Image (tube, rainbow, N blue to C red):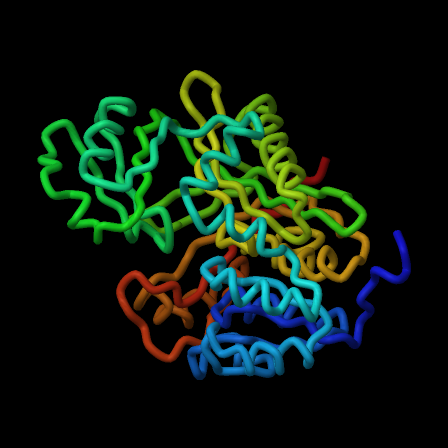
Length: 361
């Protein structure tokens, strides 16, 4: 590794996005001696409580230029940052991951096409740009299927299920008349994800394959390790490695996958940032996903990723975070609250990780 590529402790990491991921990233960076500076339009965002904060729009070029001058490297905690803002910053400071990888992750059609080109199986899919496209796409995917906006959807937003009896007349317009992707349903037994990191020298390190359980389209629990066979685990790990390498990606990438009854592992989505399903690593792994981001983007050696205990991570959604006192009374629980001022249904307010120490061998 070239010494010139290393961004040493004492430098300032710029973070695009100011939610809980940015908050936890800034905390991890601080432990390694780095400063952090958040760029986020919203005032009083969770990450602003622990780091310097520029509250400006992503289209404010003067603010972006001042931000670039104040930091040594830039990363993402939010994948819907406009590409133009990332390209502007990249003219002045390293941005890791960069605009090319972000463009793939921001558009479901680009994402599916990229994965398929890399030899990675996905659900059957087709781009939908009109009502006629939707009707033709359904003939390809069959029913049931789900119509998703190509951009900006997350946690079940921007999606419409199409069942055998669903009337699709006018559905494209009801989705906003924007570019969409139609995905055929996958008959899967469970959902898993793998977080992969890639450093400046091309080194790749993957965290363990974890099992994800959703409730109302939002991640509810993550189980570590996933309840899968060694063969399934190896396939999931290989998909994550192949994806991050094909993207020529620097930083941390999450790959969400379906495990099918016939043993296939099918890629679903990628996220170019720390991921909810990796929160267990703060308490349960040798290196947390957030520290690994810092290591990767700053040119440091990647950390070891093995778990130190079996874990269950549970999201605290809405008023579930009000149970903080009871959670703190459990000696096996590790509570993380995100400092959000207002609790709303469906809003992630924190998480709790329970550790189950490995038995003595």
